[in-house]
Image (cartoon, rainbow, N blue to C red):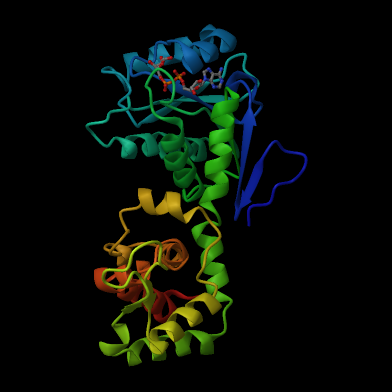
Length: 332
Ligand code: APR
């Protein structure tokens, strides 16, 4: 769960990794590793890069020069990471990574995610246990803060790493508040959602799949009631969708199985390729089946017929299929 202890600015204890947001200066962080938002030359710059070299001293640049003279003759490619000494900084190492410049024409989110994933991999190799990240690419490289926060928080908290503590160091209030809003909106991690699903009684899961198997085409038909009569003037009640008792039974068992996730589903569904037809869900974590089900069930309150859209797009069947595969083959 997202536990917010009083003593931290904002710490999300998400499963095994502790994620903390702080407002401050990356050069002051006494973590094992601080990550530098470098450029490919590795020879310094402004922003985070300038601050780290200024406060860390010439040793850092000297090691960067050695790296350029050896492994990185052509410079450090975007999305990759390399470690040097931290010089006079309170940290033990600096991991330099090169973020992508934001582009509206090209989706470079994979490269931004790679900066964090590769930095954690290098930190693991060093034996580090704590890492401080700046908001890479959100300065000179112009990446919009909210989009960056969604990409990097999702990447870091699902990363396969031994790092226990990750701190995001945000330089100004707007950045901090953006990261805080996104972190809260991400809700529980995949592991936490799966733990809730696994704790539900088997008979409830068996009931869900029996009801789902019994659904006929007629059960999936949706009728509409209400709305203006032909020729009727003035305000009238909005039309509303009528679902079959059989489908209602499936939906209520889904809700009873706590497949409903407390997270910002409206932001998630805009960013996820799984919406609206559930295409790719078979290869996604079972938690995404719960997130997609939550999105449709919650959205129905705001827009009648969303569940009808899930039926027609195939998303409802994709969700049930993914839950069944997890129940029969993956559940611990
Ligand atoms: N501590 C923490 N965060 C900082 C600090 C600092 N001392 N200084 C700046 N920031 C914030 C910025 O406000 C921004 O949100 O870090 C984020 C990243 O900004 P940049 O440092 O400009 O990094 P980036 O956008 O990745 O651009 C990298 O800028 O400095 C050059 O050599 C660097 O060419 C590279 C480019």
